[in-house]
Structure formats: C-alpha cells, structure tokens
Image (cartoon, rainbow, N blue to C red; front, side, top):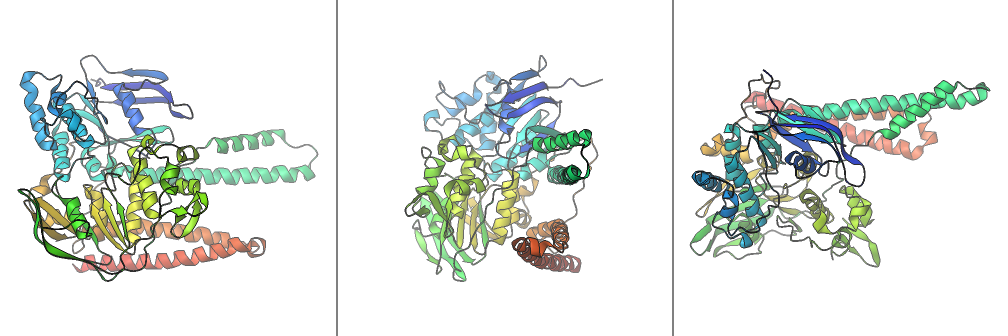
Amino acid sequence: MARIPLLQMSGISLTFGGDPLFSGLDLVVQPGDRVALVGRNGSGKSTLMKVMAGLVEPDHGQIVIPPGKSAGYMEQDPEMEGFATLGDYASSGLEPGELYKVERAGEGLKFEPSRAVETASGGERRRAALAKLMAEAPDLMLLDEPTNHLDIEAIAWLERELGASRAAYVLISHDRAFLRALTRATLWIDRSVVRRKEQGFEAFEAWRDKTWEEEDQQRHKLNRLIKSEARWAVEGISARRKRNQGRVRALQALRAEKAAQIKRQGAAAMSLEAGPKSGRKVIEAKGLAKSFGDKKLVRNFDLLVQRGDRVAFVGPNGVGKTTLLKMLLGQEEPDSGSVLLGTNLEIAVFDQARAQLDPEMSLWDSLTGDPEMRVSGKADQVMVRGQPKHVVGYLKEFLFDDQQARAAVKSLSGGEKARLLLAKLMAKSSNLLVLDEPTNDLDVETLDLLQELLDDFDGTVLLVSHDRDFLDRVATTTIAMEGDGRATVYAGGWSDYVAQRGDIFQKTTVKAKSSKPKVQQESKPKAGLSFSERHRLEKLPSEISRLEAEIAKLEELMSDPDLFNREPVKFEKATDALVERQERLLAAEEEWLTLEEKAEGA
C-alpha cells in the first residue's frame, strides 16, 4: 500500500524581483524521511523551508499537507509579544498534561523557562522556539540551523532526541557531524535547481563533486564544438559563396545554450597572511584562577602555547571559555596566577558577538571606516595585507555583489555577516588568530576553505567552537572546560578528547535508523594515527589526483610550439604554475607515503 506523503509540493515557482529562486519545483516528503537541506549561503534554503511551512507564498504551484497531519517550523526570530516568560511561549498551545515536555526540552537545550522574554538573548529565544517545536512533536519538523547557539552537550541531546523520534524532519545545518548522524536523504539547492539523493549528508560531497565534474566535462565538450563550428563558419566565407544555413543556425543554437548556462558561484577568495614570526613561546600561563562570586571558572590552570599550535576550547555555554581566552591574551586579570605573552605578537580576533560590525553601517563604510584598513586620500579603497584594493573588488572576493556594497550590515544573513567579519580579519597580517565561534552560519564550501587556510597558516590559532567536525579538522590540542573550575588539556581534536575521556560523550550520537542497506561504508580508522592524520590520509588521494589533472592540463597547454612567441606572458605563467604544482604533487606523495608507513607500522 502506497504511503500518503506528509507534504507534497507541485509546480512551485518563486521570484523575488530578479532571477527565479525556484521554477516548476516538485517535492515530496514521506513519513519517516530524514532529509538534509544543503546549498550555498544565499541559495534559498531558508526560503524553501518557509515555503514548506506555509510562511512564504509561492508565485505559482500547490502545497498539500494531508488532513490529520501536521508540520512545524522552528522560528529563527520567534514573535513572543504577549508572553511574559520563555516558558509561557514554549508551552503555548499545549495541554496541561503535556507541560512536562517543555521542562524536559528546557533541561536538554539549556534554557530557563522562567526567563523574562524582554531580557532574553537571541540565542535563548531560539532555544525556546526549538523546545516548543520538540514539545509539540508534529509529524514533520522543519529545522533551520537548530544547533546555532547550542553547546556540544545540548547538540548531543538534540541528536539523541531526533534520532529516536518517529517524526520526519528536514534539517538545515552547518554542523556536518550533526547532519551525518541524522540524515538519510539529501536535498541540494544549486542555482535554482533542487536535486534529491536517497543518501544522507555523508554522501553529499562526493555527489556534489561528481555532478560538477560531469557538468565541467559537458561544458568543455560544448566549448570545443562551438570552436569547431565557428572555425567552419569563418573558413566557409572564403571557400563558399553560399554557406550551409543549417549549420549556421546550429552554431547560433550552441552559443545560446552556452549563454543559458548558469555559472557556479565560486568559493570566497579568502586568504590568510601570517605576519612576522612570533617567538617560539606564544603564551605561558601558570596557576590561573578566576571566579565570579561562587562560580569558579578555572583554578590552578597551566598552559604553554607554542608557535604553530592550534588550541581549541570546548565546554558548555557559560562555563567561561571566552573569559579564559581574554585572560590568556592579557585582556582580563586573573584572580591569581600569571600570563606571559611571547614576543612579536600580532593578534587578530573573530568575535562570536560580531561586535566589530555596526549593523547601521554599510558594508562599504564598515571596511573603509576601519582605521587599520583605511587608505589615506582614497575613499574607495581599502588596505589589504599592505596593498590597496578597490572596496567593491575586495567585497566580491568574499561573494558580495555590487548592490550589497552600499547595503546596511543589518540586512545581511548570518553567513554573510560571518564572511564580512572574515574579510576584515583577513585584510590584516597576524601571527595569532583568535576565533570565537567562527563556523556559525557558514556553508560547507566556506567551512572547507577556512579549514584549509588554517591548515596552511604559518602562525598560532586559538579556537572556540561547538562544531565537532571542524574541531577534529583543525585542533591539535583541546582544552575541555567542564565546570567547577576544571579545565583539562588533551592532545588532538574533539574525537581524540572523547576517546581519552572514554565516558558518556562516546554515546552522544544516535544514528538514524534505516531499513535500507548502507551504500557507502566508513573506512576503518588507521591504527597509530591521530584523527587529524587519518583525515589527512583520506584526503590525500583526491588531492594527488587533482594535482595530476592540473599538471596534465598545463602540459597540454605548453605543448603548443607557438605559445611562447604568441603569448610570452601566458607561457611564463604556465611554466611557473607547472613547477609549483609538480612540487606540491611530490610533497603530497611523500606525505601520503609517510602516513601509510606510520599506519602500517602500528
């Protein structure tokens, strides 16, 4: 017997004053679906979810939720007018016998139901909205970035609840570990096209890369065909008085096809430049202690940070991670103990509150008004790592368009605000990066790029994050702040910390149950390697293949005997690029061999 869908969308089209966000979209969500909704920042993920929830009316099409079934949407900015407390809002609409569900969700998500609405932060309001949705338990839950403003313990609670739930849900999240644990289907929005794959987020990146590779191959074939037909058309002028008009029309059709192709949005052109080398010893803390009233943040804490270290700070919200960071940077005095900063430090800070961004300023003024970025006598330029650049050109490197340059910062999405803050931070050279929750709202591609930049950064990184996947990819040391003044130093990232503790944290993930056989099986961890080394070993083969492909293309280009005489500058650039990629290929192959030998030796 066929199942009745929980939600069915037919022929959905939506335009916001320009190119269509969606056109002729058909989409079905079935009972038991666990769906990751992914796509670049600005691709329309949140808009599509609001269409599903009935909060945005499409221009055309029909949305059907069967009688007796319900769908619930987690409000990003919930309207709480008329409610005295967060608990009043979260329990509205529930029967008296169901109020315990709000209390239970409040404990898991760490929000106080008694908190007055007027004094609650944005994060507390979002947690109350999530608790309300979890307590209502609709047949279909629509969750837009539910892990934002949650600490790792609360994320683990939410994973367990969703993993055990019988409800269907659609998830938007930047937290890859969260998506991998819970989803078994993926919706991908890419240039107004919505694709679906019956595998969870774990298979997304391979699917995306294969799709783009096939697209590039088709584009390459189309370009070659156009060149061939164009050459025939030009040569035909002298060879024939009357050309084959059918072929001319075919050439015009090919050119129209190419013009209709929508270019993929590139990755942000982010780059980090380390300042002059700091001293080998960056920070040395001895016997640090700090309390606020009866609450102990740290006690008798020692830490040595050396040049090149990547130190992550983890722990529940409110445990004191940011305060400890400020003490280590000399910005806050400890009650006792000492902090010695190393020599020649140039510090750059990414703050989670985005305090460096004035919401009323335009993006243009936010950059040109920064004293460290201002170019004397040039109102339209900014100083980027010692070189003047046009402000709009620099904003484009971070995927902002011309119109956004004069828009107010408050008009930006969370991901766009994060990119603007990264643009300010990366304009300056530094040798000590302090990143307080940098991953919130960033899309997968930007997160990947940021991780690669941090890998290559010739300086030191202090990082606060609740993103377990990002911690595993970046951190070489993890400081776990566990309350009551306990701050313990562990080697490695999040998974290494969990393995060394060997306690309840190992049970925080509940895999989505599925009757379908697993298509892709996880490779077994290589013994003798840290998590970051295992991750690197898994990534190296694809990196080697990419370098080999780039070398082949460059060699093909340089095989043209007339290239040097015809385009000497292009020949020189190609030569330099070939040498550089050959060196990188050799280094990657040696690194792979070293890691393989280490794994086999263990």
